[in-house]
Length: 445
Ligand SMILES: C[S@@+](CC[C@H](N)C(=O)[O-])C[C@H]1O[C@@H](n2cnc3c(N)ncnc32)[C@H](O)[C@@H]1O
Image 1 (cartoon, helix red, strand yellow):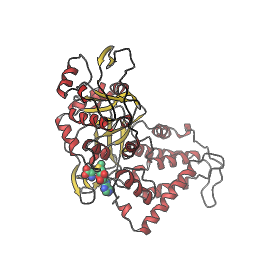
Image 2 (tube, rainbow, N blue to C red):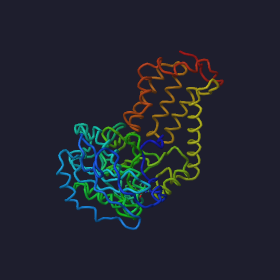
Image 3 (tube, protein in one colour):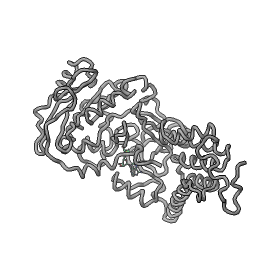
Image 4 (spheres, protein in one colour):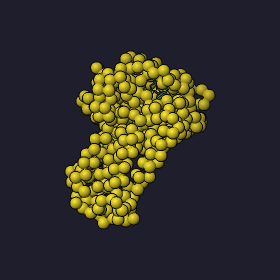
């Protein structure tokens, strides 16, 4: 199940933008030992920003310089990490300036721009994605993709498989064209938009084309609209941000998807893998939402946050089938809760976990089954059943990796479980618990 902290399509940022108050500015002040408009980097004060002090009515654009001048200024400073002198804005609501930092050399020349504060931008430079270019050797390999673009009448462009994909096959792994910090919504709208436009202007030409090819669903400002339609919710150093990867932005939503994605903070990359067999001609889909909820709730969420009427098969199902599906979703929630009960009065049994797995499969929720396998592994462990605990830990590991990435905490637990269930905190925790009549014994075998 996707949590609030995991990656997901943006949507909510659009709603958030509407609520932000726009208030007058304050002069930019930087808080290190360097003079204003500079930053301590590599032991030297370097020009960090090209400042513009704002007012609600009027941005003082006369303080800005052309892109070529910004490039020349950046080049004039040895070891300056950005291709252009960053442009920044601040105000009372956002005293820490928000700037556009652009690096055209990032990811072998694909480029990237960050709209964020100076400390966070420089923090990002420490990631292997920036500091060890070889960390990206498996990323952005988009030659001979296993899919083709296709136009769907009800939902626009999407991707269809052009070869059989098996569970675990990588569909792509991409770095973002841009990462933007929600703090930018504290700026007055015209400044926020200006940073976005400036950022796009700084991208290398081929990457800029990828940006302009993106869908603008809401038909507002052309840059912000493309960000709102296509951005994913990501986390960098525990700060929630939004990122646009043009490849995954071509994938449509399905409440019962056949692919899953995760964000890897070290490589600043977004991975997409098949979670089941996908045959040539089938659309490759992801979910934009937590899809373990009832149909009306899913449809409302997609309409409110993404502005579209979901047309996937589980949204379009006959009311009778939709009601059966909703009942299974309710059962998934109830059983998961029962399996999570580790008190002495817990009613959890391995049979319950088997039912949970069956419900996930019946609901075609394979992409998020990792958590169900984890429940199964733990409940078998709690009754001292070593081999079933290992079997389900192995299955959990595969699916959790595909859905949550390399460093998820449950992955660590399942790795340990697969190795030695006897060392798990859950081992034999429920041995001796009463099981319902007709069920097999609750003792270790
Ligand atoms: C990230 S884009 C996906 C690619 C998009 N179809 C395109 O042509 O570029 C998200 C947009 O695709 C459309 N879309 C995605 N999934 C859909 C679905 N299941 N039903 C209807 N529209 C969908 C909506 O317009 C949504 O705002």
